Image (cartoon, rainbow, N blue to C red; front, side, top):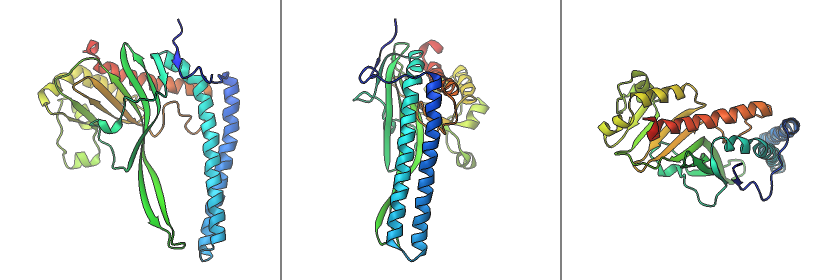
Length: 302
């Protein structure tokens, strides 16, 4: 029996053939290029206005062109992304999850409720929530974005402006394992500063794992029982297949958080250079990576 995906019935999405989608993606390239060109022109006009002693007419005109270009680029990309999602995502999701629910009003996954280390930021937001059941376990996917906001005053106009900078975009998955653990643990990548200053971390005894990851917990012995040699090897195997640096947080109550700093969202069209077949393969590969990582911590995989 075909699994039902809540949220795809009303309004019913338009599912295209791969050929139709390919044509739409090709059209979107032109629209996005036009938006970029308009943005570049607007930026050039703003610079010219500043060079000419703060000519407000030019600065305002440039700002309008810049905003129009960004709006055009974003609108065209959003349309192409939605068309791609409607055409490809349901099939990919149906192969992995049951009882799928799109854009639910309540969210289970909150990045700031985890022990996963995040870069300093002003705002944390989640989008594209997808909930389903994976082998009887509740799971939720979403895209997490962190932004930094700075206020500054333009010398040429005296006006205060806000500069919003995206510092993190990642694909996250929460899987409720329906079992309790004796402790919590967090795994995250080691960077150059960690290695340089020999940052305190729990050693697993696997030299390759310890070189690539930090491990923290409030109970070292129990953490090492959970993260046994089989699990460390399986995590390392998945590391070689990952599409970004990733972190993992396992709570005592069995909530498993997996975060990949991929720089993109789930079912993202990226630069728009992939055809529908390539997009389908990438989406399936990314989804399988997440479920394979969840399988590492399932009790049946001990």
